[in-house]
Amino acid sequence: MATHTHLPIYKVAYDLLDFATSLVKNMQRDFKRSIGDKITNECVEITILIFRANVAQDKAPHLMELIERQQVVELMFRLARDKGFLSTRGYAKAIELTTSIGKQANGWRRSALRPLHGGQGRHD
Image 1: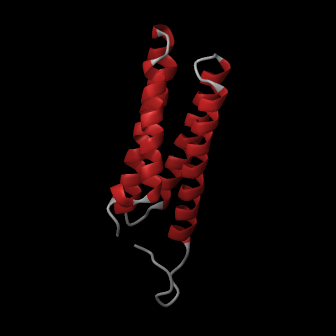
Image 2: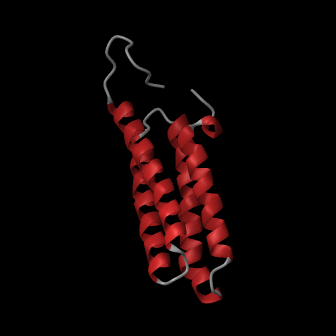
Image 3: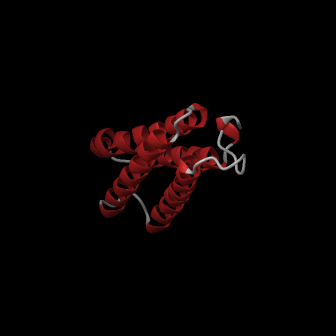
C-alpha cells in the first residue's frame, strides 16, 4: 500500500486545495465566509477521504463520499464563476482538477469492489 501522499489522486487533490485557497483569498469578504469557506472545507475533506480510503479495508464508502464531495466542489466553483469570483480560465482549471479526482476515485472504487480471483489484481 502506497503512502497517501504518493498517490496520484492525492497530488491532484492537493493542487485543487492549493487552487481553492488562492481563489478564496481574493474573494469579497461577504462571500469569503459562505462560498469560500465551503469550497475550502470540501477540498480539505476530499484530501482526508483519500487518506481514509487508502488505509481502510472497505474503501468503497470513503470513495463514494469523496465522489459526492467532488461534485459539491464542482457546483461551488460553478457558483463562484457565475458570481464573477472566478475567471473562465480559472473555472476550467478547477473543473480539470475535479474531473481528474472524480475519474481516479471512480476507478479506485471499481477496483476496490472487484472480487478477488486467485490473486489477480491488487486489492490492498
